Length: 354
Ligand code: NAP
Ligand code: ZN
Image (cartoon, rainbow, N blue to C red; front, top):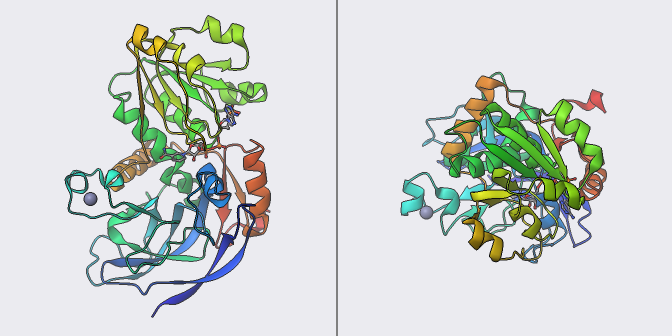
């Protein structure tokens, strides 16, 4: 039987969220039903809720950093059982037949449908993790290692996997000792520092916020900090970095950042500002530099990263909020005021902390 679910939805481009009752599909033979415990709040959720990319279908229930406990399994599901702690990320559907799907790159499948603001197999709009329960195809679920607390595991499904894969795709994890830059110290950026340091690199944060320098160095372990609004600091650091990860959510020019790359360096973009990014071609040509992008990661890569984070205790720094404070959290995300990821306590597990 299809079930009524309580969620939190935005209904227009003010992005304001309010309680919203909707229907989830019945648990099919390939599905698991998950009681959602926590959901991370990515800047992506705000982009969508406020229709900043111009493709939002209202009402929208955001949330793709979903963790919870399985309450039901379909008859075809062998890899999960009732009571398992699981995560669900951005992908809710792919063709499962194409070359990309067959090579664990299903996040790039042409038929990939996101877990919210997408079209479900029955033609309805998908609703995300700012809700009490979700029904997911088991193929898109991952196990959460026993030693990872569920609240801190949530952002790994989005912020974690996005920066992990962007770095992995540029072979950053293969040889330590590289000079790595991270532009933007938010949810994604702080995880990039953690992975960069875990894999033995020298990490430089490139930020617009002077107040973040101390935190970046003392709390997150970054080695250096460049204030991108200070031309002298930017000039000093010219041609100093092998790899730069751009996690910025706002419109910006790449020109000054490309100057920071060494010859042969790579700048990987994962932030998705509303407007197209502009960049000058001359420093690319004269420096043999590469600009590339990537989206989240495959389910296999999410499991690989989860297991690694469990083994080495690589965990996001979070602020837990209840759904009552959901709009306050959105406002603070917009004001660049979060250290470093909000996580919604959907099940009321930590109500006492508020
Ligand atoms: P976030 O926590 O808000 O962090 C973004 C950071 O960007 C801010 O902390 C800020 O860092 C910097 N920033 C903000 N405004 C800026 C400006 N005007 N100029 C320069 N820097 C600015 O956001 P997030 O959750 O990490 O997400 C970041 C972006 O990644 C979003 O666009 C999101 O949609 C995208 N994303 C992409 C993927 C993917 O698969 N590719 C996955 C998840 C998220 P400083 O204060 O240090 O400057
Ligand atoms: Zn496919």
